[in-house]
Length: 455
Ligand code: NAP
Image 1: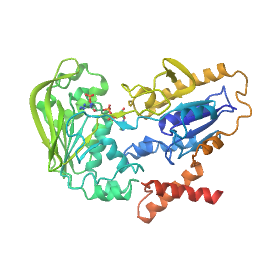
Image 2: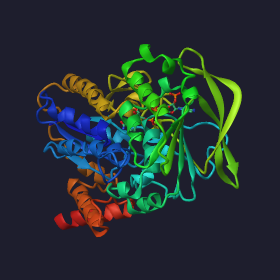
Image 3: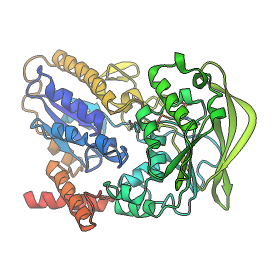
Image 4: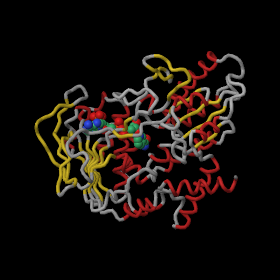
C-alpha cells in the first residue's frame, strides 16, 4: 500500500491528492495531506478575498477530496528542522511539496519599510485571519492609500479598501479587522502600474468588478491611457487584454457620480521611493515612464508624487526556501523536471513538487489542476519503476507515529471540523454568519476540544 505525503493543503496540494486518488494504477494508495496550519485550503482560505464568495465556495470541492477515505488531513504539522524532508522520505513512499509562495517580492526602493508601508500580502493575511498576521490597524487615520502593481492582488486590496461595513459584515472576516475597516475613512485609493494598460496583469472580471462597487467612482486619465499604443488601437491585442482596455475606455467616458470613494487607476509610473513624513509613510514618488514599443518601458526623468498614509506593495508573491530541499533563489522555486525535484541537476528519488513552488506564483486556482496532474503522472511512473509489484512497501508502519515521534501534534479532520463549528458559533454570537478565528491559541483550543471529545 503506497503511502504518499502531500505537504501543503492549498489548491496545489489538494489537487495533487485528488489526482492521486483518481488514478487507477495504484488503487490502494493512501495520501496524508500535511499542513503547518491547523486549517486546510491554503490561499483559498487565507488569500481569496472574503467578498469573493463564489471563489471561496471552491472549498467545497477541496473538502470532498480531503474527506476521501484514502486521504487524511494532518494539520499543525510543520516540515522544518524537527521534521526535515529526509525524515519524511523515510516515513513515506513519496513526498510532494505544494508549499506555495509564502513571501512577497520586494520593491527595492528607499522607504519600503517605513511604518504604513506594507506588502499587500500582509494586509490580505490580516483581513483573512491568518494566525501569523500582524495587526497594524492598516487603515486607521488613512484618507489616501496607494497600491503599487496592477495584478489581481492589487485589485483585491483596492476593493477591500472601499467596501462598506454592510458588505464586509456579510463575509467571514475576523471581527477585529471588520471593526477597523468598517470605521475606515479612506476616500482615495490609487492603483498604479509601471507599464501601460495593455500590460496590466489583472483579469477583466476582477477589473470590471471595481466599476460596480457601491458609492465608488473610478477615475482614469484618458491622456495617460492613450500613451499606450494598445489603448489607442486595441485591434491587434489578445482578446483578454482587449477586454481590459474596453473596460478602462468605458470608465474614461463615464461621468463621476460623486461617490464616497474614488479609485484612481494610474499607469506608466514606476515607484522610486516611499516618501517619509513624521516618521511614517507620507506618499510615493514615481518616475513617469514611456513605452519602449516592445512591451517594456523606459524612464523619462520626470517625477510625480502621490501623497498617501498607506502604501500596499502588490508586486507579486515569492517562494521561500524549505530547509533540506533545493531552491532556486532567482525564480523562487524548487528546481524540478515534470514535477520531479532535482538535486544538483539530478532527479531526487521520491521527492516532487506541484503548485506555485514548482512553477512560480502565476495563474488562477484552476491552473493547479494540470500542474498537479503532471507531477502525479511522474510520481506514478516512478513508483511503478522503482518498486515493481502490487505492494511497494509491505508492512510499512503508519507514518503518523513517525510524525508524532518527531514532535508533531497533528490536527486531524475532526479537529478541523471542530474549528469550523467554533467559527460558526463565534459568528452566531456576533449576529453574523461564520466568523474566522484569527489566532493560534483560538484555533488550537477549538481543535483540541474535538480531540478530547473523541479520545
Ligand atoms: P502579478 O499578477 O504577477 O502582478 C504583479 C504586478 O506587480 C504587475 O503589475 C507587475 O508589473 C507589478 N510589479 C512587479 N514588480 C514591480 C516593481 N518593481 N515596481 C512596480 N510594479 C511592479 O501578481 P499578483 O497580483 O500578486 O497575483 C499573483 C497571482 O495570483 C496571479 O496569477 C493572479 O492572477 C492570482 N490571483 C488571482 C485572483 C483572482 O482570480 N481573483 C486574485 C488574486 C490573485 P509588471 O507586469 O510590469 O512586472
